[in-house]
Length: 219
Length: 269
Image (cartoon, rainbow over all chains, first blue to last red; front, side):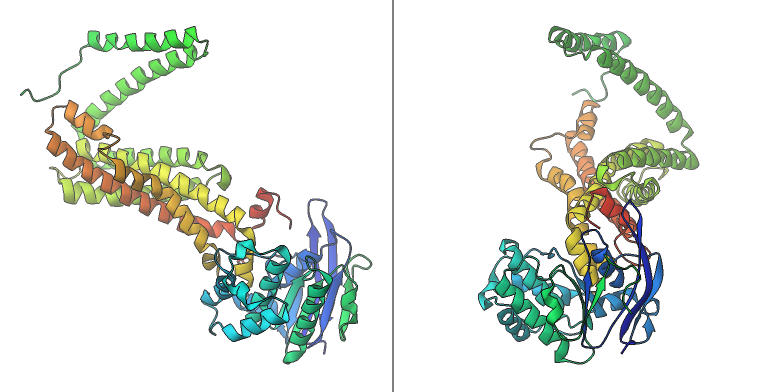
């Protein structure tokens, strides 16, 4: 299924040192693409480029056969949704934070509270957290709330930057189960994930793109 | 009761130098090293104000509409230069945008005040137009500098939130709306505060000047009310225009956050 999501010769340079990275890879429907490499290899930058939050020098991305430049950028970002490693926290409660994206013009659907509550439980967070001031959350809690917020927006592809980085083993594996369930729950979904950890390899259908070893990437 | 200005003769004006001597003695006694700037400042005050006095006399006599427009435009240019130097967070402030927003807000509000409220004969009477437009400019200059600086500092501190909103599919405007709100508040708060305390804490310079000039205090107060309200309106319009024209500079052509915003505070890219 090479035509679900793939990128060809995405080329960008890193920082002032100007090291150039050129990569190609593909993601199958229902699959996971794992981006690996040492710090400073350009993993986060690649995610941002794929989400069109940053510009690359050259290269193309295709989703369901469509070139990324033919799709309005706001729509692209809603479909290919990037979740940063450091969670963005808005003023207000956790509930306010989960609702925030639904105030945007591009969102036609309404916020679904029961879906949010279900997600919280799966991520080992209690229902009561909804009333808590989001700024008072711990790092691990904020990361899971931000992940849930992205998932509730129902993107086609989730771009995740070390989603388990600030989590203990137990909640880390809850997040992995949650993501694995999410990507298989409906057709037309996929995950591209930056991760230092090897434990995501055990997810079926996982491909690895190593930015440290080879610059041409996997096919 | 006597009405009219009590004139200050050259001799009397010279006496005011006594005040400089007092300031100079304090500076010398305490070794503040302010003597040179003090003397230079005094000389400049005399020269600049004397020249502007002659210039105003001339301008009032000629009273030509085109000349007035040129002078006010020149004032806008100087004000926007000053404003753009007061925005450390906005980098080298956008001079042209500052000028345009100052010019539009000053001419809009100033014309309303001069034509509709004061209505002198002729309506572009330089004696009215130049002081009124000058007062508007002096205040909106500070307002737009404050709000532009605030916009950039807010965006820098909320960069994660803005990027998150963009990745939810927000337009640039939606992504910075909270920052815009803060920026406009910052620009308008001093003006609104001055509406609260005027007459209680401060007697405004214009009103004081009119009273010294022999005007009826009740008339002076009426003028002051008009001036306060027009300044508030001009600051609001000026800030809004500048922010609306400036926020796009924070984004690239493809609605991503401009790399310049990241590098400005060394954020991880």
